[in-house]
Image 1: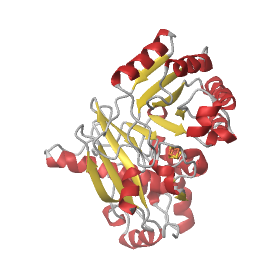
Image 2: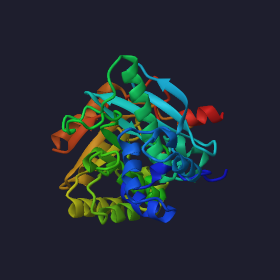
Image 3: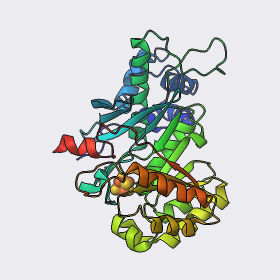
Length: 370
Ligand code: SF4
């Protein structure tokens, strides 16, 4: 497959438009009009930015794509979760998930088409990585969700607004947007480090989509150099690490990445991330019946994480084609949770949202490829 045909306008940081305008021969004040058009009025095409002269709208449309990713398919779950299959310019498809909770929307975005890491209970890795996404394609997933949120509001007659109480009087209401971003969809973010960081900076930028760093969570399967590099970026993104097993034997069986960066090295990197950023790392631990959900596994996890400021998020397995593990009973999940809590490990048991759609990442795309 070819790379996207035109770069996406969503892939530029707001402050990059000024020098770009200069380069293109546009007066620098046009940059502010472009940024307002992109992030305040959420233009769907260059023609929507009517403050720009028609000739320049045409020139910009030839240079930059300005459409959110096309929604190819929507799966609805009973608990209002929606999984979208989005089509890129080159025809490749990625998934994003919209998860409403307590008046906020959390959006899970993808960073690659497929994935190279082949974790056992993940559909994204089953066919390898086709290509990495550009920053514009990652921001484009958020824009697609914004469009859908606006359509939802219009359907019930709510005026377009993001609900930002602090907006100054007289400023134009803008599109609703997700309150939280989790980078946990298809792909390993640190396998596409530069594009992912650029996308997250755009989402975080006050002149851009303006989602606070602490509302952005980056999830890795355990790519140690990526963790150490992120610690040096000077941004307080939340870091989540897929651990899933407390020792090397079991973890290498479930997650081939562990053969490259074993558990001890991973935990040392996570400690370094906390020391550098002050942000507590969350460890994701998918519970699989009789595989990693026994009391001895809980005790090994307690020993591994003892004394480390961190959180553990337990997730009962969602069924994945190609992995024959089973979801533990509710009683066993609660017993595992209880053991960790008694050892004073901050632990939550996650309700798996979207159970009646293809719940694990990558499954919707695989189904459409089958
Ligand atoms: S869990 Fe993440 S890193 Fe592992 S195969 Fe799936 S997408 Fe890739």
